[in-house]
Image (cartoon, rainbow, N blue to C red; front, top):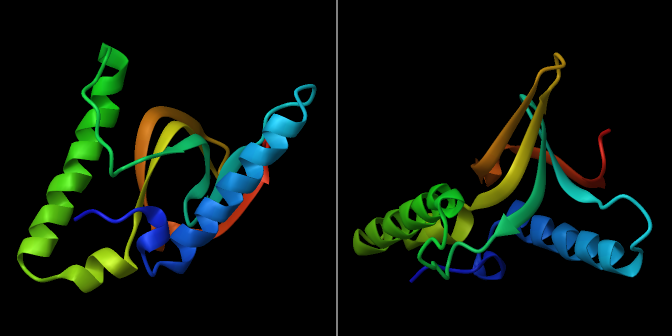
Amino acid sequence: MTKSIFQTQDFKAITTASVLALTKAFNEADDQRKKDKVIFVTSFGYVIAESIENTTDIEEPKNPDDIAMHALQDTIKNRNEILSEFDNQEILNSNTSLLLKNVQIKTYDGHTSNLPVMLLFSDSIQGLTFGNLS
């Protein structure tokens, strides 16, 4: 069975969930300032995400914009089922992929890319913060 982010043994994933909760609390407490986002530091640049989506409760897409999210959620579900079927539970417990929504990638050489969804593997994360890179 697919585990939630808090059921893994992945230090980066659990830390990310804690930062996400803190970011949501700050955003709800002050409506006047610019909303903070989770910012991942990776080897290729900054990955800024509006939200981290649930990978355990998959809903059918309600509109065409949700198809990519649904496809990645389904991919994660299938991957986890295969790993469980072949007794690779330790991989599921120690490695996490984070499903990000409304993603902006700012490379260190100044290029910017915008993606509707992205699957970020926790081993790609070198650091983590929150705020705005405007």
